[in-house]
Image (cartoon, rainbow, N blue to C red; front, side, top):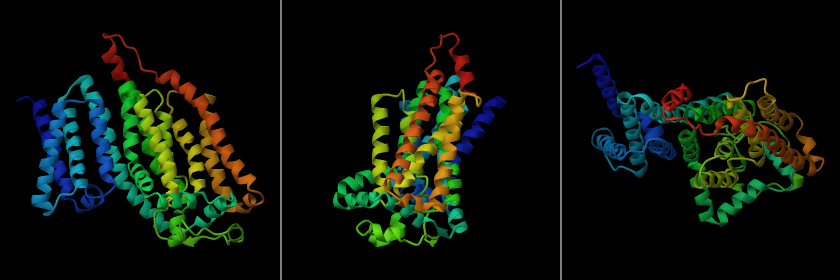
Length: 416
């Protein structure tokens, strides 16, 4: 047996042993495998895998390994019933194992394609796992939150938008339940858009995934600049039926208040990610774009209806996403105004908003025209700035028409 083959056998053994080892970790089992959110993440991993390289033998391998991992878990590690969420998680881990084995044994272009699925799959899981630690650190570093300032702004618009959305959720339970499924199913729309663009563009889709990936940690920086939770945490059982009157909100004493929970209000990353997915879905099929839009629309409703966000959180998400998109549009140089202008506006607009909300909140109470105009202007200017970025990016993101003789070399350059 050659040395190369020996190394591949050893790597394959490590990959197959890694899944039971992870399942044996109590922290990973509780926070990921058996959680309510992670099955969506694992399902996204499976989707990316099969979207980029669908093989029936891979499907069979995913099912076989998923069942074996689940049986090992229920018979050895955690005796008892196997819940649907854990089945999905183990199928996702089976997908990761199959992709890992494929990456070890495949060659050339086939290996590059599987790496376009495997590496994002690993990073998706890792980023979601470590996001919890970031949130806990933010909560301990900022025991007091600035929710009153965000509520004051929303109230200055004279329309309790978040409370109305919450009332709609309680009146129409099915609507609320469906919206909430799309809310927690966020990873799937990111997977659909990234995988679709990876099929079209191969390695040139990598900046799209990077934009999705870095949104979390960069958003965490903003959460430390302006820690806040959402109206349901501020009002408790009074949400969504008992908002303050306009006069009460106008006279509200604005000060930091101690609240328990994740400081992840402004900008809304749920809104940001689905908005980014919609923007990046350009060029995909009708069903892919349609799904991205449905996720965006229902996320707008669910972020407000669940009471996890104020309306202003969603508005600030627009320039924030523009900043990320400009940051990751590597096809344009930094001296190109089509990239520099969106980058500068996308970065400065959220910072200006945070400053105004914290230090000049009374300005918005002079007239409801002021907060409404600021919100509309923020979204409108974001769209204008994005148009130049979008049109410029299209020039370099159209699917390459490669001659058969040069395709392997050209694609190899794209993946590097």
